[in-house]
Every structure is written in C-alpha cells, then in structure tokens.
Image 1 (cartoon, rainbow, N blue to C red):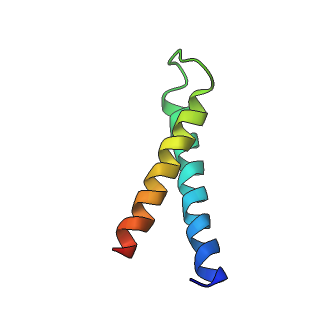
Image 2: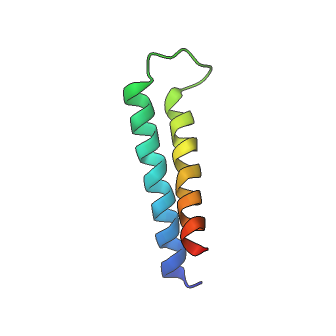
Length: 58
C-alpha cells in the first residue's frame, strides 16, 4: 500500500467521524450521557468508516 492510499483511507475515516459527530450533536444533544454526545458520534462514525474501507477491500 502506498502513501496515497493510506492517507486516502485515513481521510475517509476522519470524514465519517466528523459526520458522525455532527449528526449526533444535532439530533441527540438532548440526551443526558456521561461525557459529550459528539464523542460517541465520532466513535461510531469512525467505526463506520473503517467498516466501509474494510468492506471495500474485500
């Protein structure tokens, strides 16, 4: 894997993480959870991005 593919994959994961944080912050900000709800959205978004890249590789 060359550097261009690695950074492209990382960019996809970071973008999904950003979208997850925005969506969770916009729609679930009223939920009382320990910590910031956007961090949970970022975690789920990053997991979705990793899954998308792994599924694309297979």
